[in-house]
Length: 290
Length: 165
Image (cartoon, rainbow over all chains, first blue to last red; front, side):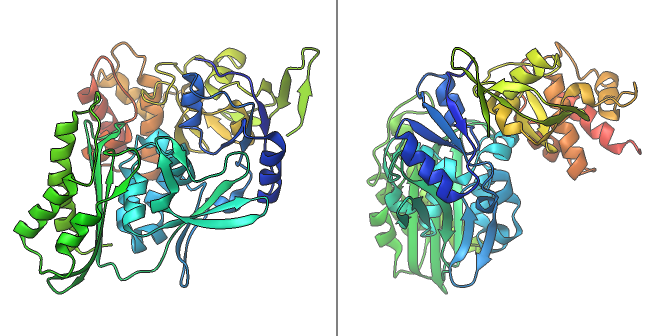
């Protein structure tokens, strides 16, 4: 399988990169790890006139904790770098675990968090936990930057808030928070190299046995990753019990609109949402790591 | 990166990379994949092409010590990198202990997945010299064996890990 022809650029700075995008127009695309875009180009789904490679923008690889902003992850950090990062493991273990559940080792060595978000497929593994943890992204354009909550970033299957031909996603930020427990549960047909049939992330803030706050995000059961707000309302302010979490799971089923495909039927996915929401909440409440 | 255009206007780029310790400066097109540079230009056909979509791992090479699918890396992206293919695993005519162990444990059936398996295993042993069986299974999870000879492959990697250097 061969790739179509394209021009190739390696800007040395973010300013140069956004300038190039504007000059080349919307038919040019950004290349990060390449594990999604090159597959789409081989399959004839994309034929960019030019690829703007970010490989020389080394500052976008960093993962660091900043006391005021939180965990700042450069868009070019690979899934393995996130999964092995001491800062990520210490602050948001559930994120490093989600990064580790994605694809396989070879793809995790190349694929990036920025690419995982911009590719915007409904079954992506990082968005649910990022949304549950209230993360936002920074987009750089020729006129400066703007931030968008990950929750509002996705606009449809394979489409997101980035303005094509103008903007580059530069970092993902998870703010400091009072969350006491979080987790991401992926249900795939194999343990490795499989897309999520359903993915459920949960983040809770507990006050003893009482749920002070909760965020639940469902993956692969709607055109975008989606919050299960009604399910959160079921448990917020209440003492948790197994029955309450089951009720939250049943409510979450009403928050999704899954499709049937080769990985599972819509009916099966709905039932998975119920079970996995219950399990994710229980894990976030009882295991107590964020 | 400076492009050189020919009479038809096709652009080519000069890159520098190290493959199995040797330095190369090939001139490649933008759409040349690393796997095709290795196989077609450098004649290193030990790296296999399977699915060409990043699922099977036949084309696994080490890029700056990390296993990657060379079918999903542009040759241009490997500019300045160190690549190790299966041809670079044996040193001075001596098989690597992993290669020896694959032979001793009959961990090779048709052999198509073997180069990738060995490179994934080599990267594992470099960062974790004494892996557990689940760690071995996870490290080679991106390498599919259509002969399904996984039991002996896992045994071979575990045995190579025990051999003292």
